[in-house]
Image (cartoon, rainbow, N blue to C red; front, top):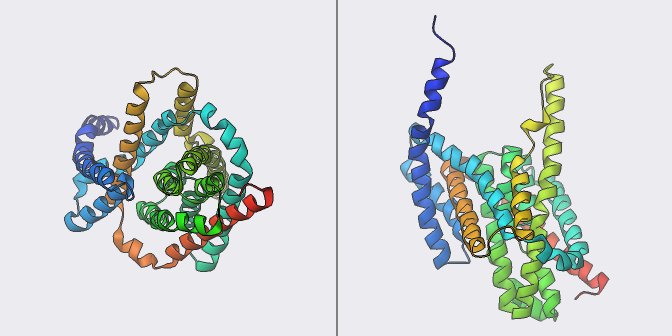
Length: 347
């Protein structure tokens, strides 16, 4: 009789070798994407990684031996990147500005999710893609999408499409926000609050803020960092929602073995731990830039894996509706931010 354990043990011992081809491919492309991101900051390394991954996927079509490493980069490395991002956020640093901008941030957050849900239903965009676009627009672009993807277990092509859609409007925002701010006569702090709450990606917030003025850039950056911390409660809420849905499905199927620990985003605890270590000064100051650089590279590596695993044909089959969804959510968020500022007298 053959032992049932032996094949699993052999598979386990071969796992590093199985991961190597796909990880090596993702690593090479991620290094190239990081270089492109430094040369063209408006594009950024994360989007470059997804684009390179998609191009290689279509031109080279990596075989089955690449699949385990590509999947590992798009899942486990994705979670590590989110945890490492915690080293770049000092909770004490953003507390004051965070409280000042909280009312605007909460309104734009609610507006983003409500608009995404309504438009998604009207445009008949599938659920995962609607939620990913909503999260990316509401919080912090590609980083937020990367954080919730493991919780939702969203397909790679949905993740890639959502990040590409959010990136499109990041570029538009950098180009039009400063001109609109001057046309509206916004103060430096008013524009900083608008950019920090209505532009998705941190790099785009920084670019638009400092294009307006140094003071606007400083304020926008801190508001954006505060907004980014909201990914933690959002992930926890989504984890509870996924747990509730899976429990119902298990009950309907007669399977009572569901456990919340299977869907709880443990990597978010790692994020909180990293942020706490920074906040209490337990990380040497010279190490912080290195840790932030590591976090950014891990995101590029992970999203390169997402691009390598995405099916471009399925993305193209989705049509223009996700773009219209992203446009509608972005316009709603930008307008609601200005409206709340007008009401509370922060313009």
